[in-house]
Length: 207
Image 1 (cartoon, helix red, strand yellow):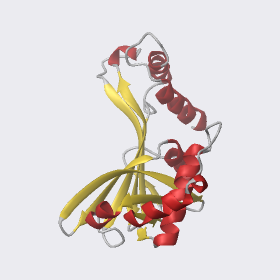
Image 2 (cartoon, one colour):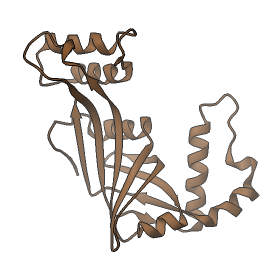
Image 3 (cartoon, helix red, strand yellow):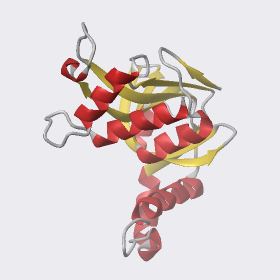
Image 4 (cartoon, one colour):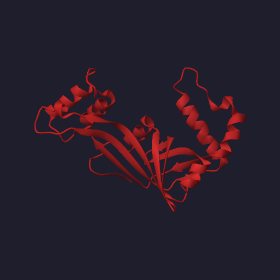
């Protein structure tokens, strides 16, 4: 179930999948019997629509600390974000703020067995290598990868709840949004951020 809090999310499942694909280094937080446990890891989108399914892997020690497979967990996907100077606004009075896109994927990950874990490792490396001119695929070192695999645990997360938040000046008048875009796209500005500007333009186009 895709929900929203604070700011409307208009991207749907396709937009959520794209957010994860563009920002695959996520934060995992689990409410374990010993308290809150936090890790950082890469993830992949396995399927999108309806819903979004995510694959990932952790070292065995971290997986055990997270009580992977039993503890309630959230994956925090941090999209484009950046400082917004009040000097960019045409109107007044304003204060500076922070624009951002973020999604929280809640659920209980399924802990995968050795063969499925190895497949997650293969897919992860092959996915990120695919953009290189000469990809270094896992099949080049299968024996070595098999020796490493027992020290890793893969997981699949089908979120039972997604909270996606988008704060991209969509509540501001068009003249102020234009000012923010000029500031973010000005290479001479210390707070320039073309990626954040691109996200703002996408939201504007979809309104």
